Image (tube, rainbow, N blue to C red):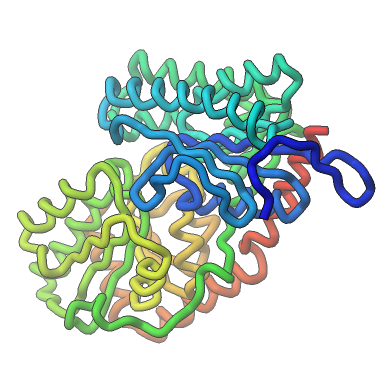
Length: 408
């Protein structure tokens, strides 16, 4: 295993191997699955990879080397909620990212490329600074932040305009950018002013060696016959209110006491959602695991009869590819979600599509699948086949490497 001391790396032909510094602000590594897959792909291709990210539950070490990838973690004062909270979080993160970037450059492995993963879109400040020193800057566009801000706060105010400026400055600073889908590429070109040939689409494909199909674990059904599964962040924009409303309809109006709901994930709204479920009389019907290791995620999703994506229909979610959809398909699970552009592109016949933001139709679609196991099997097999033949990460990895070749 390689250490973190600075040195020049060479391949067998005697050529210098490029060194990469990835900066991630919103999730710790290796918890961020897309970034960890990207880092592993770059490592396997001969790149020397370092990562700067925040600390989080289960990821408290300031520095460690995992799978030959050097990780530098910094503290954050809070999990932001509100404009002032985000200002504090982003300012603190930017300070630590600058500090640790210099540490990696002077005392670590060094870097030739800064690979910035949003949100937020202010990492261009670091990329632009080191660009003056001859470094390359690649922007990995995970979220469309102006739409994310609007989804969280319901307004297009001064801060929304700041998000638009940051986004445009990020694209102007980047030598190359990566988009997670064609909708994001269109934004990079039309709103970001970036040349189309400098925008590379690299979708968030799952790795099947991680998402293993295992036997169901009955305890997650809580003594009931069926389980509805969810995995994702517990935040305001994830639409979990709709899922709880749908669960309430299923239990009360439809009189179904044979269905448990298993929700895997952590986030700023977790405790609020837990209390909301209790207040709705669903305390015994909804299991919240909090942020959980892969084993728990695999147990819950493999036990589930149906998996759901209740993300609210809005401009942000309509254009975004959700990792949870790919994970459900990889585990051969039928899906229910609100009808959105990128959700439909990803899942196709692996999903039923409820009317946008309609909890009653979401409940009806869930029951439609729960009561039709043969249809569930057919839809699940379609999703699994689509992942195996089109969407798995091995099909996306060459596209990531092509983006890096474009930096030369």
